[in-house]
Length: 455
Image 1 (cartoon, rainbow, N blue to C red):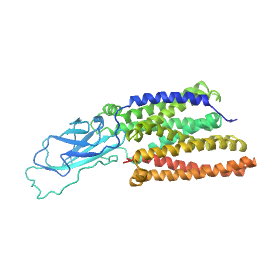
Image 2 (image 1 turned 90 degrees about the horizontal axis):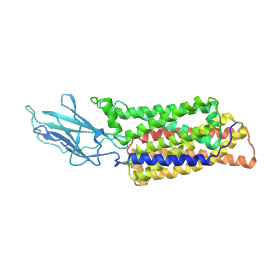
Image 3 (image 1 turned 180 degrees about the horizontal axis):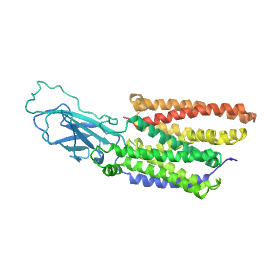
């Protein structure tokens, strides 16, 4: 039989562990952060016509460039591609210098790419002409605008993993994280014994394996981003671990596999589920999942944009509150409600409603903080693709709030009438299922937002 659960001591111990590990992560990755970088100058420049082959190609960016992530190639007029050797910094850490092979002649397209601190691939190209016998000097050269960074993943000539696949992997990671967090929340605060049910156990194990697999795929994808066809897997992996996003991705892999290992070990030692014996398991899992969320924030926009000291905790709180609201609702509908009678189901929904209201408040506040931090001015959000998608996410959340408010009104009415009929339960469940659907849509938008630059 499932019962109510209150665990203030567990929460206190968990939060102390999370704070300590978060400080370790902050110290580990306390290097200067840069968001989506942009190219501001190139020598040769786009459209230049040169008499002789330049010895080097120098690119100046708006922010510092981590050399392990930078690579380039040239495409000759006959279509032959040649990879350029490992670059070096020029007059500052913002300048990257590649040695060019000699001799070159005709039209040359030079492609560059790098991975920013937020894990995004940034790419661009510069085209110039090298004079040679039989090539006449153009009579007039039209001025060409300075090259700009193309903030997107490369095509088949660069990165082998297309963006839709990346979005799906991110979606799976987010969804698994929220489901696991929601199930632990339901176990610790709403209905003790939720993870001891057959459905709860399957959902817990399935979510843990999904999160571990998705995290590993994300890390492999990042390593693949750093391979350009000539360097080895070991070199690419070493380069990935030399960057903050790579280190955070590896930490996510290790923490998610630790969750899987803990589950397997627990049920090997405790083949018969005991509600009391799950306290330690749920506490450890909750700590690992929060640290997973910290690594997500530390390897993305929350660290790479302005005021990272505010963005990282805001992001962790935002994800944690989403786990309580969306993940908790999924746990209620899939695990708790099917295991209890109508009276207990309404009581569980009542307890969840109180926590969900608080979680919504956290989501609204942290979402506003992140919007202002990433975009600078709230009224300028609509001017970028990132901002417009963010507005779509806000619209979806508002719809979820409307459905949640309707459920709360029904629960309040139930308190007044003290009736626990099947009609009220069915109406609340229908509304909750639609609310979960909107939550899945919000997760999809979030998975796409990660790939876009706020600037």
